[in-house]
Length: 235
Image (cartoon, rainbow, N blue to C red; front, side, top):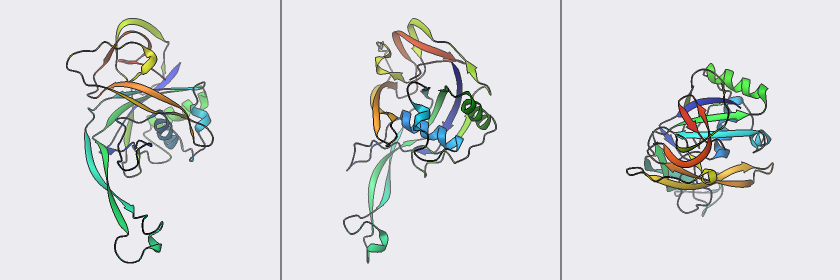
């Protein structure tokens, strides 16, 4: 398997949980569909044009939390839809309403990407290596601009490994193996969109374990990839 790895970070991130309405809560890290959007942004794909590129049979993605997850609240200005759907339809005051939203402060992640299409993999590597992107990458919404940097300036070629009592540096797909709980670590579990179909509907959700400080997670037994200095579960 050929893999490209890069770090991505920013001042803030906002990965809104789609099932929330009155309270805008963020995922602690980008979902697989969001990561696909970030990669497609760098490559220059338009909205809704890249879903077939990131299906389970032709792509693998991994993610490592680098900076500890820190949540903060920021008010977002929305149109007051009780008075109208467009600002031009609303007269007088009260056109806007403020909604508190949960943002991630100082987020930094490492993303691992493997695509079956070798041509697109080479394009991605070239853009990352030259620190270029066709569109400006962001962390969830356009107000959360992101920077990125390729890791080791190369394409890794790796094979799956299987061991017991292995420390995994990435987030862990829930069915990858049994976790060994360690003192002093803060574990979490989250379920997020994994794949889109051509109608932009979620065709599959994925569930993950993560350690909110970015520490490794020890599993009793699992299949993983050694990518540089990291042990990673690809999904």
